[in-house]
Image (cartoon, rainbow, N blue to C red; front, side, top):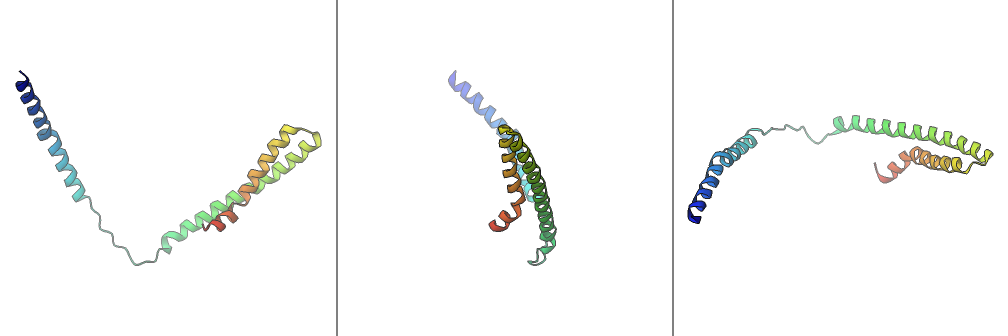
Length: 116
């Protein structure tokens, strides 16, 4: 009985390999071999690609810095009003905003220091 069941299982595994795995493997090999792309690279000058990216990076960093200066100015005024009214929770919130504004305004210096 067990021997017959083992033969049945073996034939089922053999059928799955023959009907599913072999065609799938053949299709994967065929696809991988026919989807190659030849690249014709022209020398080592990459400035045509990197110059627009550098310009975009400079623009994004400038926008972040400008927004940081605006946030810094807003929170300095908010801190002055909170200090005048002796409102400690607003002063705490304004100090957090001042720190965030300084970080955003100084992002270009930090990135230049890090080599970006």
